[in-house]
Image (cartoon, rainbow, N blue to C red; front, top):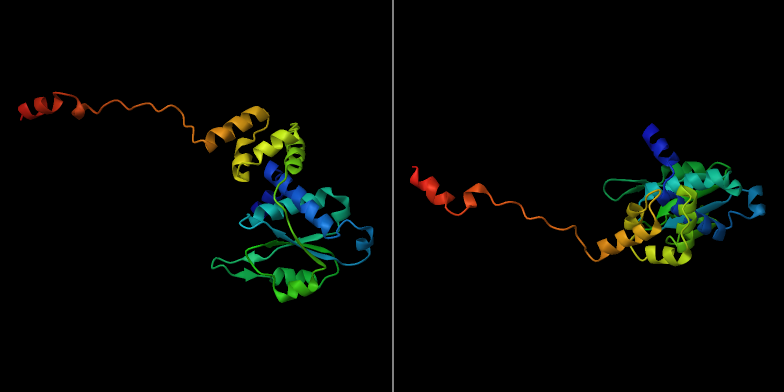
Length: 210
């Protein structure tokens, strides 16, 4: 449990970018309206297909701790089983309370009827956009990424983008590394020296000593 809490508190470029996509979706869901502070509101945020649920839950924790308008929201998510099952017991328990909830939901699974009935809005979370990446990089490491470079960077899979970004690494190098991987540019190959038994004459010499 402690490891899980520590993981949620850790700020990374990936989580900051995801937090910004969640913020955009939450805004569409009406979470930032002042009138929503007067009653319970339940917003389901469906993350992109194939996304890592834990990373988005961690991003949601960052969002609610930094966005004053969302400070009253609890974060809830289903428990995924080893056999593709899904457990909403925790969500069901939270829905009975009076606080507002952001439910982070994996798109691979259909929404149970109970959650559909409780939700005020169901919003699909978008992919990381150039302005999300630029803002996340600025927050994470103070690095300035212009929109043109951000668009080029996001032409690559986001997992590769996260791997290429490092604090202090110039954007030009990030782009170069991503381009190199995309074109399968490999480091120069150094031939291994021949094995002794493969040297000319070694086999005959070895046989003649028997």
